Amino acid sequence: MKCGAGIEARQVNELFINVDPIQAGGRLTGDAIKAIIAYGDGYSVCDNCRKPNRLDCISKPPIAEFHKDVAAWLGMDAARMMPGARRAFQAVAHTYVNKGDPVLLTSLSHYTEFLAVEEAGGVACEIPADAGHIVTPEATVAKIDEVKKKFGKAPVLAFIDHVDYQCGNLHDVTGIAKVARENDVPVLCNGAYTVGILPVDGKAMGVDFVVGSGHKSMASPAPSGVLATTAERAKEVFRTTTIEGDVTKRRFGVKEPELMGCTLMGATLVGMMASFPHVKERVKHFDRELENNKIVMEALLSIDGTKILSEYPRKHTLTRVDTTGSFDRIAETHKKKGFFLSSALNDKGIFGLIPGATRVWKFNTYGTTRKQARYLADAFVAVAQENGMKIGA
Ligand SMILES: *Cc1c(COP(=O)(O)O)cnc(C)c1O
Image 1 (cartoon, helix red, strand yellow):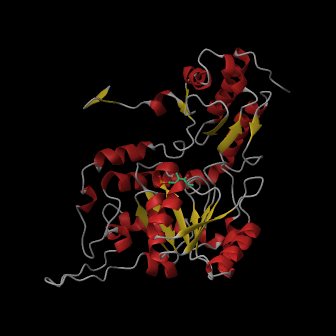
Image 2 (cartoon, rainbow, N blue to C red):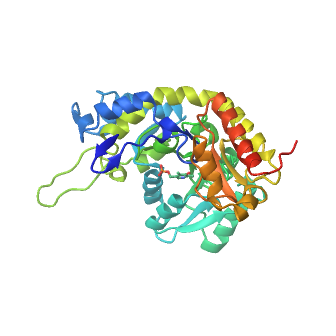
Image 3 (cartoon, rainbow, N blue to C red):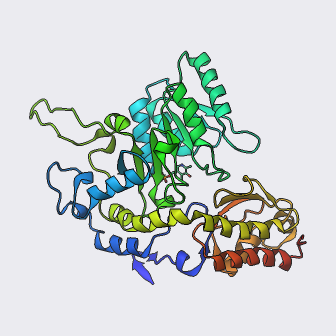
């Protein structure tokens, strides 16, 4: 099937079990697909925009209600939809960071957090993760002390990943937020891998901001995301415009500069809204996702020489493994070299491994059914056996 302009219809999620780390939680629901078709036109959500003329105030479709629901669902007071988690980082960094200010990140932070700090003129101060790739409250205290000595002041903001993208490890945001608060450091919890995947409560964690990624973890079209915050911080990051034209004396009411007035329009926003009831339901069943991950992980670990680099037992379905001692040995002599693994898996209907990777790679079993998890487990073992590898106990 062609879409015209040389574009072929993409059928990855129809034809394969997709374990691509960044795609698993973003796959659209049927309702989101319908919403995209219905609201694909440019400013379609603006049909019924009335005073005060701001996206999050529109009641038909129920955009205003959606914003309230999302904020409450994240245990926060206010929320805005953003074009990706990264734009939420940018809005927060731009509000709190001035040139030369120290900002806390971690040694596992995502590059978009670094770029947000860079753009605001801040200095990246990384809290080092421990040997098990976990960022701890203790390491946070030590880093805050180091920053205070070096800069003569505390960090102005901390970006803490709830689950990091490198190992998929779950970090003690509650503990970290506590020590940050004791030093008056506002905390942004980066839930790019958790909001829409498992229950997230910003108030319970004691953070100032919760950021989520719609297209990574909320079954939503790109670019989409959420920035939720407390009533107090909302006054700062969602402040309204004060600018005035010198000739026309025009002012722009309740428009919010950090959001450039209105953010997600049309298909992205309505797609997010359509998936939201499904997303709210699915976070309650994260235990099933971990069980499926375990089925696959145990199969992988039964292949002699395979190591897991993420914390184990897993607390998230994004998992990093080291197969230097197993699949990579086969790659040394295989005629397809490292491509043998992704290619063999593709042949079995599995998509999402980086083609050619046989040493350190990641996969994400999120959204698989039990049957698909068993199929994945068997497929990894079958590829190993087909290549004469040893299967342990
Ligand atoms: C994917 C990811 C991001 C970026 O999310 P976008 O919604 O694409 O901007 C940020 N942080 C982490 C930890 C991520 O995994």
